[in-house]
Image 1 (cartoon, rainbow, N blue to C red):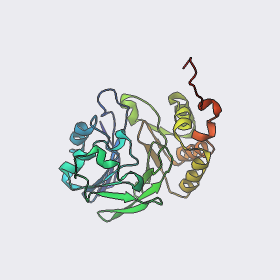
Image 2 (cartoon, rainbow, N blue to C red):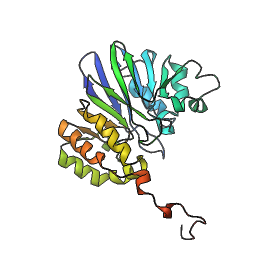
Image 3 (cartoon, one colour):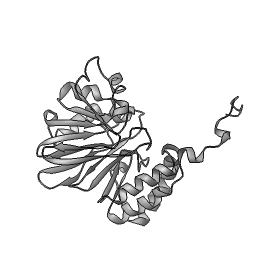
Image 4 (cartoon, helix red, strand yellow):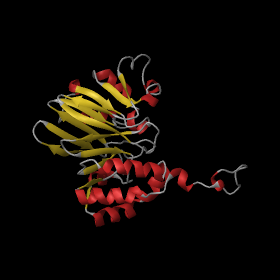
Length: 263
């Protein structure tokens, strides 16, 4: 299914949810269209490719796709790269670290001249006259990890940050308000996911310092429901800023040899 997040006539943001077929993890895909040209965000893999192509047809012709953005290198992010390179003239934006890994998803020679490496500090991308911002989100959860901020809609497409594991149509839910955010966190085990997948409290704090300087009205992650409104965004930032995660939580018990018999 598709969900129109923003539309001012010339600029649109669309979310696609519940397209994953089979046993793969639920994942959302996104499209930003400005003056008829598009950027596809985290298009997923073969489990979403055909369904996403069909859903996009209501809003946009693939021939006008300028960019495919990959927040990082995971299969649920960009394993369908070969298909998009085959049917469009789009270039793929991915962290410099992953430009030589991307060809493993593609036919030989398909990526030649079609990949733009994102530098560590991020970059600005011109989409038919409108600047979009590719902002750093390193170690959340991947080294060389990025997000897209759209200053027109004031949406931050946050990738795995904010992921909340739901099923089916629940991915189209919009969470609004601090109390609703806290309840949704508890109901979807967001804390457990982020403690496992994020890169440590220092990373959380540095990212939050950056985000507080941005005019964000809506945080839209790659997995699960989204978080809308300034009150909700601030509650999200307050929670994430002090989160202990990843290496913060490891002890010697996590590194044992031989492996205990009860595991």
